[in-house]
Amino acid sequence: MSKRPLLSVALMLGATASFVAMQAVVKQARESGMDTLEVMFFRTAPGLPVMYFMLRRGGHGLRPEDASDVFVRSLLGALAMGTNFAAMRWLSLAQFSTLNLTQPVMVALASPLVLGERVRRHIWAAIPLAAAGAFILIAPGLRSHDFPVVPALLALASATFACFAQIWVRRATESDPPDRVVFHFAAFVAALTFAFGLARGRFQFPRPGVSIFGLLLQVTGMAGFGTLGQALMTRAYFHGEAAPVSMVAYAGIALSLVADLLIWGAWPAQSALLGALFMVLGGLVLVRGERG
Image (tube, rainbow, N blue to C red; front, side, top):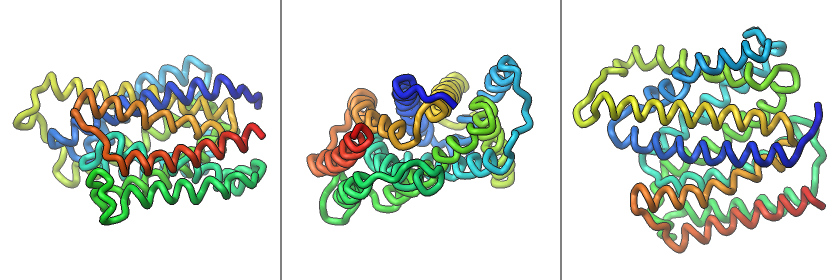
């Protein structure tokens, strides 16, 4: 498999911007009363016909070459998405994105063990920086922009699941084309959340305060930006190594700060910026180590 590092970075940057836009729509949907299962379904189901078309256009069938890796990637991705959307109701975009910055460090630490990529000493220097940043953000009494502890822990759980999901993207695309991996992930999440949602009496629309047009805008935004981000991210890991590609996610904090300010008028606290600084420093250590 050929490596194209510059292309992988550009693809991951596009994926990061798409995911920030999706998270902004998700947060608005959660604030309007949409349940986590409903959000997960509307994030994945509408994009399935498009993904199927792309898969068939590339001359690929639906049956995976390595069903176990595709299933593990789908399961881990579903857990990451569920904890992500559950946390999003109470966190700002910048808060969530900052906590999510633990993910690249986790990827850099775990990918040598899972994928057999070369272990480098700089990873161990980055870990305490990222851990210190997370502690500053969620430790009681530090006034980090009033981080609610339970949603913060959900965001950290989402970063952990997403770490291993991204590693399994790398494993799955060694035997299956990226479009097939993305399709199976979306189909798995859509089927699971629809079944559980119906069992819990969800999917009752329209609701007070949300028009049909507003609901369509939310669904289009979640599905469109989410599907685009997923496709770009999968291709980024296809063309580059897991650890350096994951570093591009640090651009998400700047994009999230802009979105928080423009949409919700929210400014981050100084301690939150300090925590983000520690995490960015951890990312810089990783980047310098990858180049060295």
